[in-house]
Image (tube, rainbow, N blue to C red; front, side, top):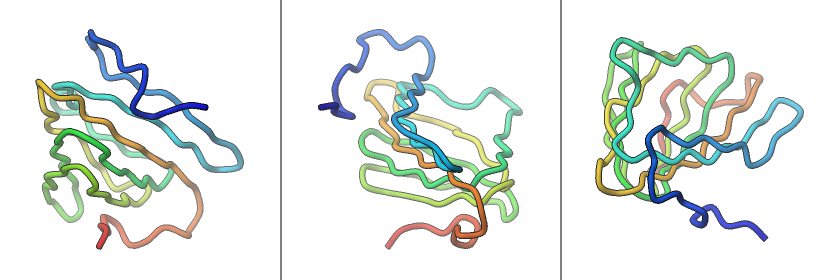
Length: 117
């Protein structure tokens, strides 16, 4: 049995990305950040849609087209449409920020930037 909250390293010089499962146009990742963010001027521009759920910690995402910033806490989720440019502006420097990200292909994703209830 595996647990998403276990095996968190004491030292985290770089963001930790682990593929938990995937296949047939879908990939599930555990992402662990501790004060990490996207490099200055870098934007993700992915071919897949991305559903992201913040399990612990805090983060701020910046999105384009339309431009917006989203502050996330535990339980907050967001679906980012394929090719909607986005970046991580900030994660909490003293707390683990644990993300669950699901990348999926196709036209089955909700509107760009739709968030949860």
